[in-house]
Amino acid sequence: MRFIKFVSVLIIIFLSAQLVFAQGGYEDLLFEEVEVENPVYMPVIGLGAGVINYYGELKNDVKNLIQGQPTFRGNIYQYIDNKHYWKVNANILYGKISGYESSYEDTSRNMNFESSIFSVGLNVEYSFGNIYKGGKKIVPFISLGGEYFNFSSKTDKIYVERDGSGNVIFSGDYRYFPDGTIRVGDRLVSRDYEYETDIRKEDPFGRGDYTQSSIALTADVGVDFKVSDRVALRLATSLHYTFTDDLDGVSSDNTVGRIGDAATDMFTLTYVALNIDLFSEAKTKIIENLFADVTGDFDYTLIADSDRDGYLDLADDCPETPAGVPVDSLGCPHDDDKDGIPNYIDKEQFSNKGAIVDEFGAELSANKIRDGLFQDLAAVERDAVYMMPIGMGWSKYDEMTNLEIPEKFKKLDIDGDAYISFDELLEAISEFFDFDSEFKTEDIYELNSFFFAQ
Image (cartoon, rainbow, N blue to C red; front, side, top):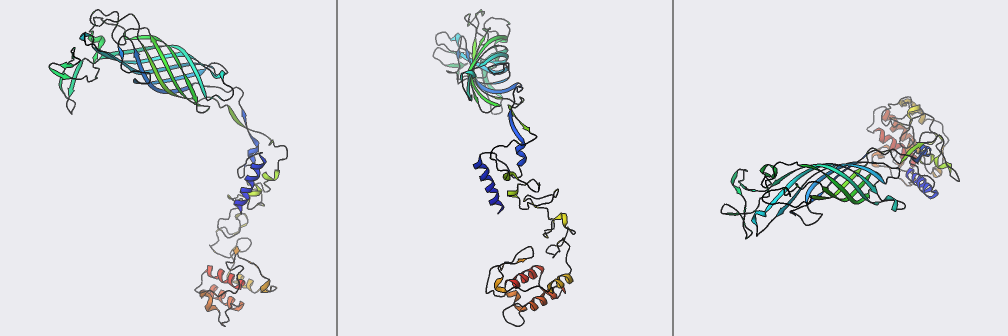
């Protein structure tokens, strides 16, 4: 029954298209979600990963922008205008670039390198949010800036072969032949791609000492995919135009061996990043009004709570609970001993299970129960009885006719007329209270129910 009433409330509220309330939620009318006029925006944190590619005198190890050395990127940015078109972005980057050169005609030109790069940069970014109307789920952007970076270049010059325990069992310098083979001594080998030799320290090109740090100009282009108000997924590519020609160890300043051109080295980064706004103020907030703002033809009975126990009347099983009395999830006063008398008027709040109590929850003695059975009550014709309350519930024999005496009560039918008379009922109850009966309390209730159902 309570479920049907609750569903009815939900249907009425939905069809009226006015307000939606949870059970006991009439206070929700006092709360309203409003837009914050000038929310405070804090810095946004981003983490990403991608691939880095090298462009210089040697060949890049891979063929396109989506292949390359794994690289990690972190950033933090802050909006600098009210419309959020412009932002200042600080970032760090760690990755590696690599390249190689091979020649059959001039075997001295066979070389390779790998450089570790760590950079710290700053750029100004512009988002094209103004080209959209309404919600902006995909927003293109561009940025320009600069960075300072360190690098360390090494080459794979020595072949090393190890056993299962990692011990070196064979090693030597690579020698390249015009037929394309690589040998260590007289042994044919393949490169092990272990970049073990520091190019600056080894100085194979007569360059001498040089600085392994520089600055670079950066340009980013990409799109942001808005996941939520606080989360965006970025897909972008950045170009890093450096002011050094030493990333690969091949420079125009070299004096022997491989001598490079005057152009500086560059690299690109293609990356995916997740930007998360953890600290900014929310764009909307919930405020509490002093009075509920409901107008029009709103049916106030939908939110009526006559006894003010926090449960709407339409979903309250006890809609007349006295003020201040604690209630359970059905809106009814608590009854800890389950004797049918609520705690607030129960004089004995720890009655024995199954005990017969009066209207104040006090257990009735055997004498009081016996006296009650002898009350001079007006008789009712049997065929006029439809249903009678028995104790706190209803008889399981309600609406049954031509009843057969249950097997356990047949011995009480002393005169054998297939009917439990009042005297036979009284005798059974007396024996029960005299502790001269095998019946339990539940049996006496059932006997009582059966007697009135005959």
